[in-house]
Length: 136
Length: 482
Image 1 (cartoon, each protein chain N blue to C red):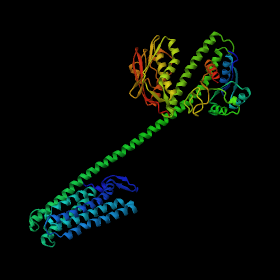
Image 2: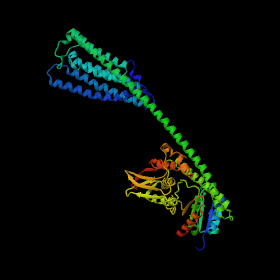
Image 3: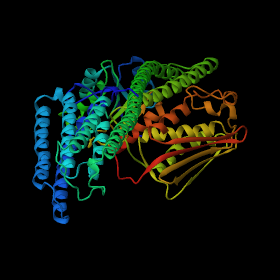
Image 4: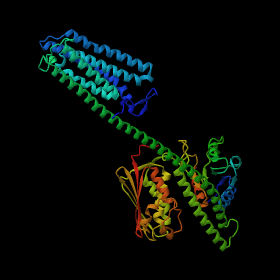
């Protein structure tokens, strides 16, 4: 395998940030971390990652949804289409469906490429990263 | 029976919001009926007079008869106008007015009937028995006292005709359809006998009719009271059920919040332990690694429990139809579920066999929940199978339902415990002894999912011989996605 991808992880839990960084780095990825939406946008624009791993439930509720929605309307087309993997401990019923690979055509599905439940299984996360990068 | 019909029945609300008794309500309904009936009676009386005049050769005062008959539409029209006026202008007086109007109408009817009988043969006239009809109507519609009052008026009129004709105060006309003896009105014994028969007939008729009506009113009132009580009981039960459902939802919401709060730190702990176990902070001594593995295993147990609690709370909290639904092909769901469970089964030499009927219908439901249902049933079957055993999953059609059967040859469930296995956190004694793994929520979740999809679940099990779950879910032809 050649150059591993650059991954941006956005989560308000510092432990999750640290462990996901260590686990992904141990599998050869370059990892940037952000502890909130604003920092996430900054890292996104400065670091230009290949893929984003995004937490949904941050301190002020479902900020991850809003961040994702804003990303899909970003002025930079390269950033706008960046693949996103939703990382969350809320695999509960919401009005959104977590079907992987679904587009946002209906407005009902999350405009994300994959979904992974917490706690992080690094091998599964790596497999999802590879899969979404392959698709994009 | 001294119950007064008009007052005896219970009261109900009329459209004008004044309190009306059942009898008054019936009377109000019947006033219109009485007025309409009288138009028919007028037509009948007039036709009879004209036919008799044409058919029989007799000397009756035809003009007087027609004049008497013509009184019917006159007072009927007056009653109609008054009734409409009261209903429009004084709806609060409708109850009282209907009783007065009914009394006046029946009294007028009796007077006209008396006049017609006198002008067409007096005592000889067989139409004298028409008084009975008025007594029946009065007994049903009026109070008991008023009905006897009307009977007294009818008797008085009859006696007046008889005595008036007997003494020659009133002229006697020979009836063409009389009782055969044209001199009957002059025979004192016959006159007295006819009056006596008429008097007793009318009073007995009123007595019977009012007694039966009073009894029927009483029954009607009892039924009405019971129906009101039943309605009140149903209302309070509904209210209690709503409160209970609300409490259950609040409980589930609380549970979900707690579970969610637990899950985030647990997920972080698991990840932190993994980082240490993978040696990302440097090499870990074997004994420490062993301890960390055990800590991770316990954390994963807790995570599984929290995951199940979240799933169950979400199912119980949400109304049955709130989750998004689409047409789910169970064949695909089954394949996907088995691919997830197969590694675990194969590691213990357990075979999973599937049989899918070509006509197994699709199900309109929530795909995540339905997959959870299959996962729980299949993972249970594998978990409680003996090493090297066999698990069978079948999909078929049963009428309009999809039939899902998951059977194993495992430890089975003791008959005494079978009724409790769908309870939250319940694990049978044998299950606990067989494996420590399990939260006791899997089948509760299955049951909640089956219920929310309008299905049913059946358990067949024999201790030591295996267990079979049969789930029936309403099938769909795939044309009703929501």
